[in-house]
Image (tube, rainbow, N blue to C red; front, side, top):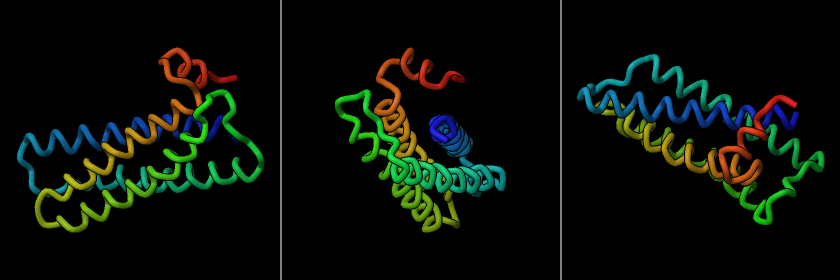
Length: 138
């Protein structure tokens, strides 16, 4: 279950980057409407975000803790903030439904990306080597 939580976190980072880059491309192309594909990616990212949050809570209740880092409490802090940020981004997107609705999604994905990456760093380590070692199949 810990490995699933770890890999899902890494997958969410990738999905947040996809949303940001897709929205940036749309903005540079001056598209006003949000494509259905981007809405689908956003929808599935939100669903996986719920699964990730529930998995984290279950692991916490089961007694699984992050002990390697002296600032391990930040893992829980970042992990609890990024779902909130994603919801706020979704709300911003719904406020601007008529024009450039994807801009709110992009900002939400940007901040959620940063918080999710920091949560992964707090759980695995700061360097890319530590993160890669953490994400290897054991």
